[in-house]
Image (tube, rainbow, N blue to C red; front, side, top):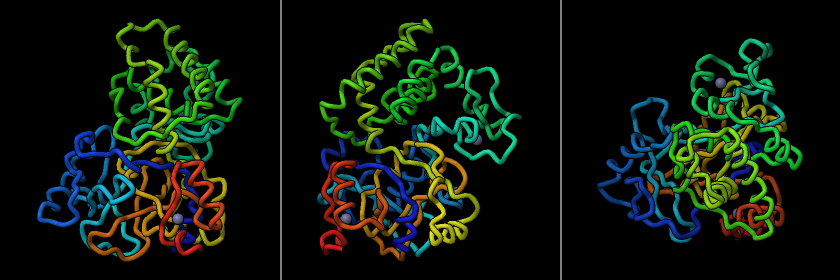
Length: 352
Ligand SMILES: [Zn+2]
Ligand SMILES: [Zn+2]
């Protein structure tokens, strides 16, 4: 089953190596104990308490997911099973805080939910903007209203061109998040709970240029100053640092989970990427090169977390951040340079 996770290449990043403490986590479900009678209550809070745009629910809807978020010995926060979970079971689903289609797919992927167009994209395309955007439904169009109204007040050509020319995708997430903050649909500190990457000084001039272009786009639209007071360089860099190691590359597989298994075994999932998205709860899962859980997307941005084998109560649930089929050297290099840590999972320790 690990090869399935491997075929579902996802490029998310690292979080919570250190520094996560009870006091800086607003969610009350964080528990530092691994056993105890409080776990049911903790789990219940996971089901109800995933706030800030995050929805965590099981397929049954009201039953809390069988997990709790606790501190690990060496890897910051982690997600643990609060009861036994059977192989293949859904742990929970999660909606992103912010998502954005790949800039090259704006006419083919829903601007809100990242669902692929089934063909006729003209029906719901938003003709009022210079670049045609596709919406899969009136519902998605309606849900986009907040950030879209703000986005439409500014000219983004300089910012978009700058990012497209450099093949950058994360600034599009920052732009959308900024529009959401101005629209009042999320708060400016909504990603603060996530672990930031440490930004190399070499990256700063590029990011500062992006920040200036973002700020300029908003300032030109002449909004009330108070509405964009959050938009400081510090805010931009803080958001970029979190997106860099927490954004998931969303690859939808379409159809059912069974189709997915077929696809994985025939390696046909290659160009299934539709966009990028940032989640809260899925970002708390630590990495393992031989994971016992994985994240997948069926037809839109809503992520499904599933276990790959039978899980004991109290066991840590880990997903693979990279292509698990790579060899030891490639995995170590990618995890170190992309995610900032040396993997010491049991597979890596065994030299596999
Ligand atoms: Zn949609
Ligand atoms: Zn490893």
